[in-house]
Image (cartoon, rainbow, N blue to C red; front, top):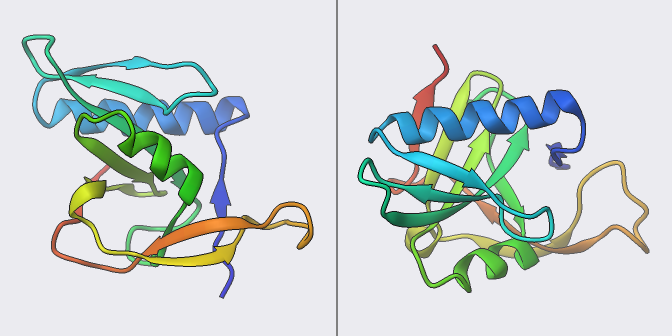
Length: 141
């Protein structure tokens, strides 16, 4: 089964990423700061402006119900975990977000990629997450 992922390059994709992070920080009255394109996506702050996490957001052009398995490139996951502050993964689906702390999730590592792809160029080490109790769901309003 191929996973349909998106990177946030177009205006629409950037809007979806921002909508996802805004919904996430709204849960605890926090805030966020966008980081460099070569870094993870965001710094996450609590309501008192203390750094509490780093977040990587992945787009899923699917509903939350049909989003599994949730993919992320292993290189992005390593970069997120290397920050040594709570690593949060957020998947921006069509109808809401799925999120969890990367250090609490169990996934499967496979060689794969994001379609469309050239098997010799675009494939990379991927991590796929199935449904599990550590993943939380919030619908867009």
